[in-house]
Length: 444
Ligand SMILES: *[C@@H]1O[C@H](CO)[C@@H](O)[C@H](O)[C@H]1NC(C)=O
Ligand SMILES: *[C@@H]1O[C@H](CO)[C@@H](O)[C@H](O)[C@H]1NC(C)=O
Ligand SMILES: [Fe+2]
Image (cartoon, rainbow, N blue to C red):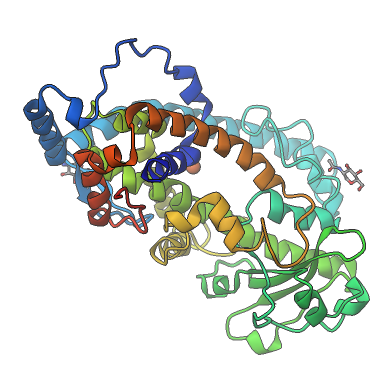
């Protein structure tokens, strides 16, 4: 049991950081006589303890404006961060240069085609453009099927399902939808009673600090269609601060342009969530246990070796984003596709980490999370007939799980051996110091 818990934490750390470079580097270079040992097998425990002590003094905790989790500081930490910078800055500078070049060409091509007059013209933005900076272009179907409700609903099940929940029988509904029966064949309470109803709630985004663009915090219903079994959008309610009482409810029965607008407003919320939550759910949540490990595990500990391979140059992300937030802090700067300032992005990212939404380690294990939200293995209502996010993520994640399980089994004969590993236990205690929420226990 504890062995599998240890395998799980490694799994979670690697799932968020996995990239092709890991396989390229390969473990095959490792020497055949394993130089890595758990503490009880180390023939020089005193030297080992002294080396950990040096790391503890050179890797200290420092608060950081972005992402809440501590950021490392100290002599050793600063040296590593400076060395990492040499490898991560050049590719970013190259990408920025490519964007600057290619946007000139893209603008000229659009003007040559008569400009942006109707919605379909936006596809010209990508026609033969962005060869270096965006070679794969937008999602398949995005430029042709953008009015199709299935494209809108399947974005939820393909890109980011993190705010999607099946409505349970006892849940209070967010708002009524009078047209439900004429759209689905079932009333809203009937959809709920049959376990066919889902919600996505971004209403807190109405509080964000606005730019001169228009945005709202949306609540939406989705449903599994009784006839086709398709997962489809039912209604969207955009909420604007101070005008909540007059909020309109949009459905597929509205004018096509009105309904499309509602879907756009909702996609802004989802995009914002994907952009800003990523910092904390993928980065801060992995950096916190990594920094705790650096301060407690010997560099000869096999778990530390794995973590070092998985956490490649992790300390670059937050400084980069922080620089972006600061340079985009004026209301007219920053990403023009969002209606809120980059400063409020940082604040929102800090909030979703602090609340535990993106930071709680165990409840965010992907299967636990999806199951708790009624998206997989639901005893209530029909199953989703297609769930690309889960179908793809499970292949990768289960392969990593199998690897980590056999890795842990190769070093520990029993759960007791894990419980007796003093460094692993120190790591677990250190995660409290590192303010790492809901880290699993490795005790028997
Ligand atoms: C490490 O870097 C931080 C940020 O630049 C700085 O404030 C701190 O003084 C440095 N610490 C050492 C020991 O060099
Ligand atoms: C666009 O929609 C059509 C009609 O449903 C479908 O056949 C096609 O596969 C879709 N295109 C993409 C790229 O998903
Ligand atoms: Fe990332």
